[in-house]
Length: 266
Image (cartoon, rainbow, N blue to C red; front, side, top):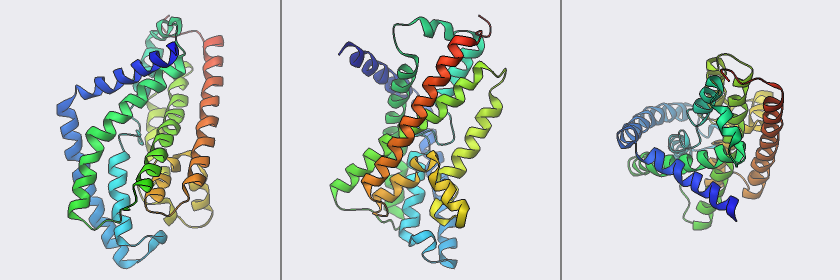
């Protein structure tokens, strides 16, 4: 119970921390809305030429766009979450302080990131999505259980996203500069999650590969659950399997780093 209260407090702290940046949040809402409008008209033109591309009609394609804008920052699809701070703490040696805390390093950062994710979903994701639904044709379910299933998929996606970014952050124990890894994280996140185009559009082996990668749990699967294109239980099993695998890999890498690597600057 004490551990649960501790990590709950860390998550609440992560939520409050990002809630203080009101101007940045407002600017982010504006940016996501503008990019959403640009992408919607691009998708509409593409779907005019290729109706039912990827198994979506135009309304479903538009819905996919606005879901992407709602989840982009909430799930840190192109990075920009805790990983920058953790990599800097590793570089400067401040990570030594974190390792002496009476708390698990991985769970601490996971709780903090989940608090950040919740705020970004509510503070930066909901408004562009609602505006998009008001001004463009979208395909949204009436069943509250479908929305609940979607939120569960988003929650699992948040854990998968953390698992990916935690591995990237830990690479700083061996690299002098993590900028290259962060750039790679951004490129793979945008391409492999479906932010560029829905993964159902990708043909042949390429489509099979990207749909099997963990990034598909960040956008493609939640979107398909909301629009009735995927069975929720199958989506949960896929995301949960990747979440467990990534967290386990992070645990192993963390153990290797703290056991064998001299902290830079420490």
